[in-house]
Length: 510
Image 1 (cartoon, helix red, strand yellow):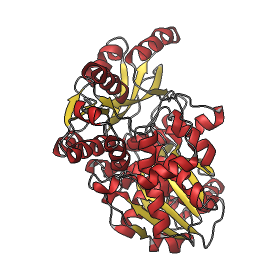
Image 2 (cartoon, one colour):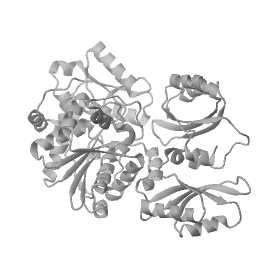
Image 3 (cartoon, rainbow, N blue to C red):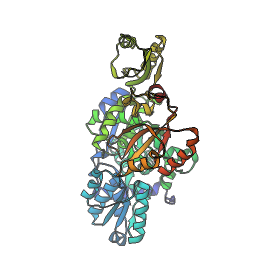
Image 4 (cartoon, rainbow, N blue to C red):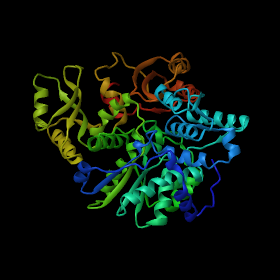
């Protein structure tokens, strides 16, 4: 955290215009997206920050701050904490300026990111199991060795460096109506917003956040930065629990609006970017485009010029499995339903006729008893939510009990892969979902904390190449166990959620 500065918009404008970032960064293309533009009836342009040498915008802010240090500070060296794009931007900046650069990264950081930082010339220190522990170690080393700590977003020089993106967008298209920017810690949003409002205040600047990592929204609601209890790790580049003090001051003053999007909507935006540009964005890199689409639909924008930022493309290849599975749901091109059908010959054929010959994308079923069967079915949609509502209505009129699971996160992450298993006896079972850190010993810690005290009655693990996997776990628990169990959950320290009352669980597995 830093103390908010008193710099005016004019002073920030001066810093942005004087930023020496082009000694290492490039002016990136502002590329048209013709397919998406035609589909939503607005001109959409994408600022290709994936084309930077480090494949993200973070190089701009890092270089601007490091290059502005005193000669004494440069000689002493710099340090940062990061598991991703800021780390690579710092490493290249230090190499370009001949400055010793140390990056503290969590031990959970995938090897591909660690090797990338080393490849750009950074000295990597692996410490802790999360960003907060890595940051604390970086600050300790900074004081011990006299290094200058370079924050990822909350510093005027970093903000000014990111603001150069806004300057380029104006130079490349001075007729924009809206600009959409992603928000994690707020450096990019603050820099772009303050630049735009000094030069062309009629352009609206809209911030975009994931629904499960909306630290700016929480701060705007509270009137000051607050710490989120937990954040989703899907779009890890913006998984920030607390927005910066200075970035919040600027965002609160200069932004024109704010919108949040789901993980499925981000996945759909990744697909849109690929189809129009053949670029593969990381989830946080596609975040702003997801917000653009949702905002344009919500406010019925037509024939407007909309600009947004592909902020990064340092994705883990295996994470694309998740994106591929979820993008159709994000576009409302697929619906997921739990349907009860009679257990008799020909029942599935009758069911297919009832849904009007639409393409079935998924069908999961296992025999349960002689009377009825619960099926998990995916249906291809052409007309979005209205078509899905019509299907549900048709099924209900045909006396098929149905539950819409299209927005049920547990159903999409776990249940669809587990259908068919029900206990042969009655269990006092409670169900929990966990975000499971990917580091050696994580499973042992989980089992030693919980698995040796209570019987595990259900277990499903999903990992899509991210730093965190997802675990769904059932425990046999009496009411008298709940107090002690809650204490052990707190000791474990993993993000978790009680899913016992989730309808997908009740429908298929309980």
